[in-house]
Image 1 (cartoon, helix red, strand yellow):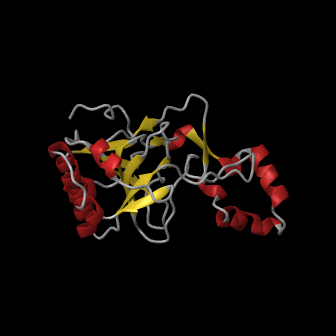
Image 2 (cartoon, rainbow, N blue to C red):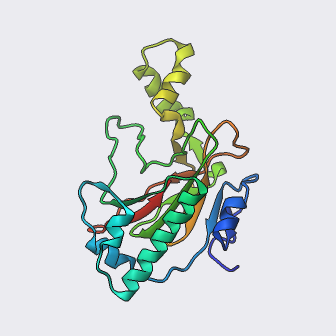
Image 3 (cartoon, one colour):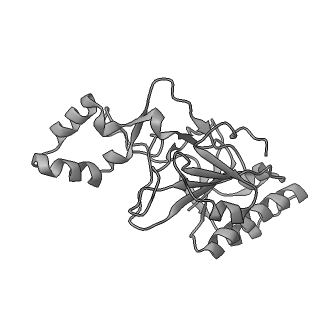
Length: 232
């Protein structure tokens, strides 16, 4: 299969949902892409949805109530099919209309919001699935092109100044406040943009995970444009 992701050993590429589920992460490969060139007018769907807050969950019944053109109808069927596939698999997908996420501006030397490169953590064996149908798409980075922010000396020192407990409690403090989930790109790091319409599976940090979790970030939204994102 010819595609722009073929030269990355971080990414496995498949052509069906079944392959997406059944392809295991291995070595540096901690993301799998069901590569698709979707038909349909997703912009029309976004234009007819109502934003109620900065992130608004869109339910199937809301989609079904929209009056759409033929191309809009095709796009809606794609989204409903993806929601069904993931739900039947046992996941809990959420379709979100996004104006913007909350920005963490409390500390000027480290950010813990989703715009910062980070990994997902779960106490149970799971994966992150996501697909951007419209708007700006997320980025991922190979693990050898990032450094954990808490290991950067200047950041670590400032975090120690914030921490009021003993040295032994410091690592727990880093974890409790999610500082340990965030990463800094190394000089020359080359991100992969996840693009539109592809359904991705990303490795999560959990006790049974055999590979490093996938480092990713939410994009800065395009001016005046909402994102339509499926995630679970």
